[in-house]
Length: 640
Image (tube, rainbow, N blue to C red; front, side):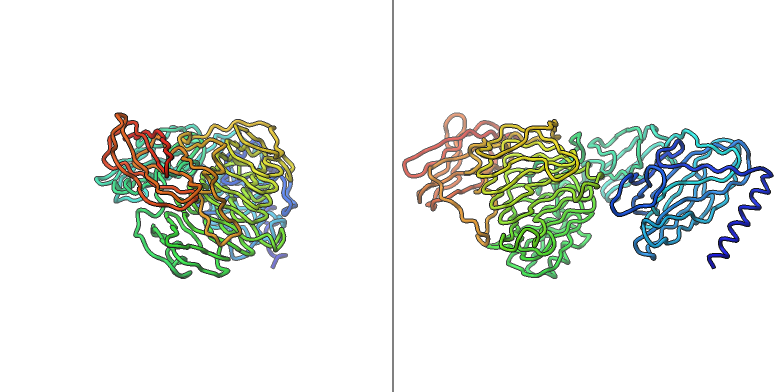
C-alpha cells in the first residue's frame, strides 16, 4: 500500500513538471524565514523529549478548532502549485489532526490529511495538495478542524516555478460574544473574516435592565463598555454582564492578582459561585457533583473525608468550609481550565502521590483563602508531591491567610525550565503562615509574584526565584529560616525586588534586581513587619490536626484593623495574655460612643472580630478595646 502511494505521488509530481515544461523550483519556509506570518502556539527551539526537526525549530500549535498557521508567498506565473508540510503527530492515533487549507481567505482544500506518524519525533511530509494560484502574492492558511488542533509543523514546501516568500501582513481572527445573551448585547466593527494587523476594532456592550457590564474578557480586556484597540493577535472578546444583586455578595477583602486581568489592572470581579445556589456537601460524591458542574455553586462543606480521589473544580465555584472541621485527607483539588474560583476555610492534608491543590491548564482568577495545607516529614523528601502547584500558564491568583506546614516541597509555580509560556503567571501571596517546611515557599519560574506580609518560621529555604521570574518580596518576617530568598537549581537565575523585610539570621540574595509594579491596591492591608508573628497565626486556619500548637501571647495588644479605610466591614485583631473581660466600643470623631462591638469574657490567645458599620456615615472613628485594667485605641476610617 505504501509503495502504491509513493508511485502515485511520483506520477503526480512528474506530470506536474511536464505540464510546466520547465525545471520545478521548490520553496521551503522555516520558522525564522520571511513568509511565515502568524501561528497559534509557540516555536520550540529546544526540547528534551522531541528531536528530528530541521531548521531552527518547529511550531507547536495550540489545541482547538480554528487554530491556524499562515504564510505568504509570491508567484510570478499563474498556474497549479503543489503544497506539502513536514510534520510530526504523536500521542494517540485516534486524536486526529486534520485541517483545511485557505488561500486568500477562501477554502482551497476542504480536508488536508496529516496521518499519525507514531511519535512527536517521527517527521514526514504529507502527500502534496494542489492549488491554482494567479500571478501575485497569496496568503496560505492552514486551519485545524478538530479539537486536537494541528500537528507539529516543521516547515511548508511549495513546488512551482518562480515562487518566493513574501513579506506578509499578519492576519488575525476576531470573535465577540456576551457571557449571557439575556443579560446584554454586543456589537463590533468592522465585521470581516480576517483582520490585517493594526486594524482598529471597536467593541460595544450594552447591559439589559437588572444587569451591569463588568468588563471585556479575553486577549484585550477592558472595563469600558465601548472600547477600541488595534488588533495584534487572534481575539476572543467576551462581554461579562452580572446581575445587580451580585454586588451585595462580593467579598471586598479579596485583593491581589486575582482581582485583575492584566498588568494594566483591568478589574475582574471575583464572584466565585455567588450567582448560583448555595448547597451543602458532606460526601465525596456530592463534592464531585457540585464542584464539577458547569453551573455556579457556593458549596458548603463540613466534616472529614479520607480518600485518594481527585475532585475537579470547574469555573464559577466557591468551596467554603463550615462547622468545626472541613478536612480533606488524601484528596486532591484539581482546578483545570477554570476561572473565577474561590476556595476558603478548607484543610487538605496527606495527599499522595498528587498535589493537595493543582491549578493547571491556563486557569485564571483563582482565590485560595484561610486554608490549611500539610502532610508530615516522616516519609522523606519525595514521598509527597506539592501542597500547591500553579502551572501551564495559569495566572492571576491570590493565596491569602493560609497555613502551609510540615512538608518538604511545598509550592511549585511553573513545572519546568522549558515552560516558557509560564511568563504569563501572576500570583499574590499575603498573610500566609509557613512553618516546619523544607523548601519552595514558593519556587517560581518565569512569572511574576508579589509576596508580602507572610510569616516564615522554622524552615530551611523559602523563596526561590528562577528562569527570569520577578518576585517582589515585601515586608515579610523570616524567623529561623536558613535561606530566605535565593535563585538556585535552574539554568537561568530569577530576579528579586526586596522591600523592608525582617530576615533575622537568614541568608538571602538582593540581585539580580527587577522592579514589579503591581496593578492593584493593597497598601491598606499591609501590616508592620514586627507585628506579623502576632497577626498572621491568628488569621490563618489551624485545625489542630497538624503538628502545630499556638503559642500564648505575652502581652495585651491590638493590631490596626484591616482593611482600613473600610466599607462596609473591617476586622479587629487583638491578643490576650490571660483570660479577661473584653470590651470593644467604637467612638466618632466627637468622642461619642456609636456602637459596642463586643462585651464578653475571653480566654488567653489571639482573637479577631468583625466590625460592621451598618448605617454609620463616612468619617473617622476610634476603636477602643479594654481588657481588665488596660485600654488601647486605634483609628479607623469608613468610606462610603
